[in-house]
Image 1 (tube, rainbow, N blue to C red):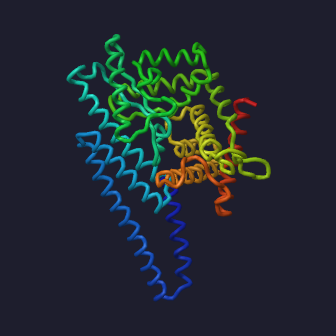
Image 2 (image 1 turned 120 degrees about the vertical axis):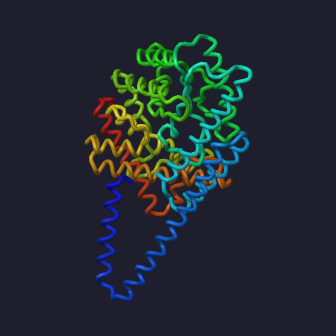
Image 3 (image 1 turned 60 degrees about the vertical axis):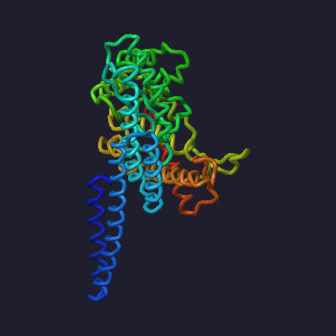
Length: 402
């Protein structure tokens, strides 16, 4: 939580504690405070032990000499964060920890791949950077991940430079898979020529998208939407910054691009029907289940992204975007609170489904059974989906996409 929220929480907690203590005699007050102190000490001790183990493994990752060792570290850290999430249920805590350790693993893998190629192909001919997109770009990593990366390198090369980075990217994708980063089913990986290139090549590619020069415009618009979450991971930070700034400039300079993105966002189906009924599959293997990613989480992230891009925000994290939109008066305090809570509710469900998948208890991490939820959980899910539909209506009105 932001510092202001922490301060407000502590102040409220102190006031409630003071109110309670004024109704107790002294021995009872001392007993209550002793119990509270013990609880806080156990919580703090547990977190300190967790952080010590995590830091040791992160340090080990920076010194790893094999992809197998990196894979072992990835498995160990995923197991550690799984146990911590079960204990705490903290979505921001999970995001931060998983994003940090996967960045560290990706950075080490990048360095090892470059060392592999030195003997036969020499060092990298130009500065380059690894940039993440998707959940990783938004610093929203969870327990299951895949590769959503691109490679950008400095200008000045020829076909030989392009060929070097083709070989480099193809090997990098394979090595990341060995470490534990599954290959992207949508092929958003630098082994795909769409997702690698020099700064000039990226500029030409972006210009072609915004000028409708490519066929399959809808697909290329989605590529630009994906690029909205671009974030530096490893390599040359200046080269990465130039591409990220270029992406932001293109999105801000071409209203038809923003309009197209807004239309995509407002047309996404949200899983809430009339009378508050949760949408579920009527037939097939997922009958009675709701795709919580497709019908809830994805529309929320997408629509918040549109507001953020339209407002010129550079932050990529969804919760940070919501907070900044509230500070900039683009969202009311009530809407921001509802959308932030919706993100927490939907992401917790997604992570619990991931845990069930990792434990072999189900075959996917997307489909939720609403009938298995407690009444209060079901109501929280309904409120979350309703807040997303309200957000879509706002964007639909602002961009005249109806």
